[in-house]
Length: 454
Ligand code: MG
Image 1: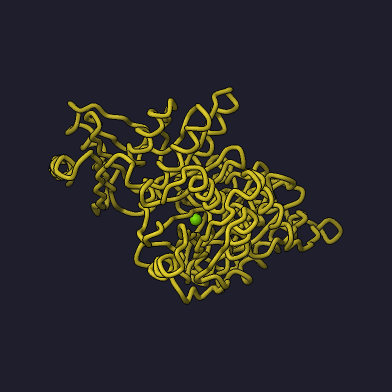
Image 2: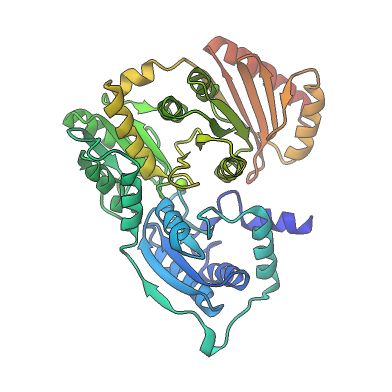
């Protein structure tokens, strides 16, 4: 139990993150890497995003692995899905220095297993145990690891994405890309060009100060991308977060495509081609289930967090259940024919494939989706677990799904109430077919939560 608490304190749902030089020091990164290197052996691929603290922390990461006898191959700056693909193909593991969508002063570490997925909870607890006991298996001079660099391994990822699509599928299509000065500068424009598209970029130079926009791709931050799409007459614009495992879109009119609608569009396209299961967390819009069912597919819900989606997809496939696709309603989508992690480059390429085969504008495709209305809110509380217990009693007469938190289902209307894993708050999501029903249900849920709060 004690170990579980420690695991949550250092590693969250997406690796370890903090402000560089404050929580995220070279000393901590060295210890994380030395603990990882004490658990595993062999050849490890490492890389980083474009943050200014990346070189400093990657040096510490490499020192920890080399000192515990692991050979290290430095892949330089690259998207995390590229590193995950490279690891899956030919390494015993990997690690990435990145803070994904966090602001520029943050950085962090993600540990990748030999199959390309992030380290699971059980092994992460073991790693933290080694770290807190300082029981590192540091090697003597004649058995330390060796370092080589392989900045071109990224091309294997680019080619692997391109191979998933018919040659020249994007011929004649103009696409605007906003890699946000992040590592996708090295991949997404090239992937799209390889598919036959013409490509224009904004924030297309790697820069860890993120001069054009923050690493989180928000509608407000993408105004330059929208303007470029409109002025150039591009078919769509695509933008990534700071490690490029997510992709979000603006349509040909420069309008932001809400991420659940993006998920539904891609799900419909893939479910049209192949029958099976779509995997997604309980927090995703019902829209995805609606389009999947209409195409003769089903949806399997998981706990919130991409690792749960990825591992469920993997388990279903091992069980001979066909899995079409998976992902989260934040632009983080997983394509099992390619690899079991979120992949922004693959998502961008899939949009090319959709527009090429549908023969319609992106805005028209979005407009044809069923309408849903979602409300999200955070409620601060210092004792979320107790509040959740009391709320369960208050809601005892309802139909509740307990996959993650409490999901109250009333026909096509639902509400998800769950304690945050990282902050002292409770998150509420309510969704319905129309605004009035969503607001009415949201009011009811807030009143029930009010009864459960101290
Ligand atoms: Mg990310």
